[in-house]
Image (tube, rainbow, N blue to C red; front, side, top):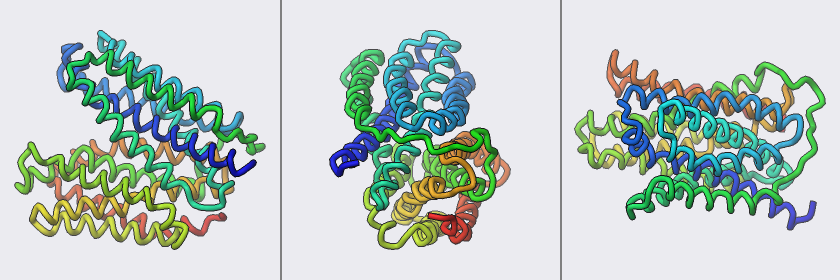
Length: 379
């Protein structure tokens, strides 16, 4: 592969990560419109939203199998275009059943893309002989900002949800048209069995991914309530905590490859965990708005490069096929996002939301002490 081809593959991988973040973020501003269009209550809406997560998790193992059998490129291409083209269906589904089906299909495309593009990223990074994973994951975050921003702006100009989704769909399709021919067409390397239960290093990586995605999900779903419940901010301003977390995480990933290249995976896991845990301590122990914002920023910065390292190690291990290992880590992560926030709600109801956040800090200690084991896997 020439230097030009390799740079093209890096660009294509970044665009695919961007499309994944862009697509899912375009859906968020449409939720109130969907609720109004269908005339459903909060309970029914919650079940409908669960369809997206169920579709994602259901497709992930299949995406790992297909990537192991045929390589990641065709899976990235098919799922990326499917995600882009399915977006308008979320704006026209007129019954709970049709919206549930559309969300399931949209989630399946997203889950497949998440698995395959991480496998593609591992392959591209391996050929570059330098860390690239954090920068790839940063594009997902940037895509999220862009997707929510563009869709919100279109709706603010009184554009219909359908027309807004068509425009955003077209933008995502253009990105995939640019990316598709430039993706790395790797030869499948898995000659062993394709159905392998996660074990050994992969099981540990999957558990740590579930913890990290749980932390990210908790920041999204519960950070505003923590701020309002403690009386530090009114409801209208409580979203600032998640904004600080997101900005710090994106910034951390943009510089993360240089950090990992300098200090390595083990030190990145160790110090990232320490910084995130410190963020929780500041957030929970110092009762001021400034401390809360600093705490959220520290959590985002510390956690920013932990998930990329876990995916890199999934690509480095040799206990099971890489495609299935990445699928296992991704599925575990999504399970943390789906089940974790609900678990936090149960803990908060039984004790307090602050107690639930202390438990999150405790889970990060598991990541901290596991760092030497994760880094011990073969490069």
